[in-house]
Image 1 (spheres, rainbow, N blue to C red):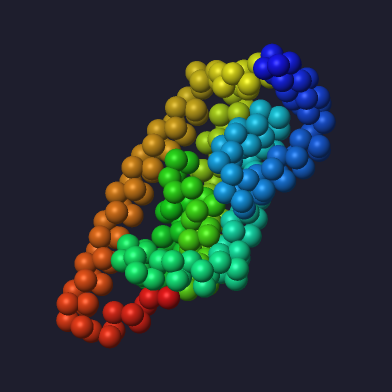
Image 2: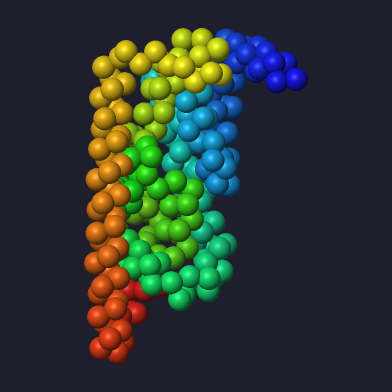
Length: 225
């Protein structure tokens, strides 16, 4: 049964390679769906787009799909899940600190969080920023737009290095390209940098909240949702 499924997948992918428009629509829709509903397959979809559409076309299709999914996830968090999430996280100091951090730094923090390919999962970021902060929608759109290209490119480019359907199924890419090593090095560096930075600013906000609470200062809640 497994061999039959792999054979069918190979036949389908071979056919999809020959029908670019269908592949573009399919991968675009798939990424919007998986990122909107928190299905952990975004990397697979973007890699497949790179394999089927190659670097430029694959990047363009995935970039717009990634951003549209971010807008949808943010809107669901803001208008559907907001009250529920606020009740659930009302006693969580870390969530208040994150809310304050995003509120103070705006799109710049969103930009940094969207940069690394292996950073905060995009669906989780979309829902959280939409539901626990007061960040305006245009700022989130802008932060995602300028922060997501590296994230998307790394996956799409990896897919473009796959030379056959068998490579895609087995996950074997021809990684001799210098662009591959450079993009991965940048991705790893940004992942480490953003993680350290996020931890530092969160700790800083936690300490600010704790100091204000110790002083019983009502100003502590001014930036909280």
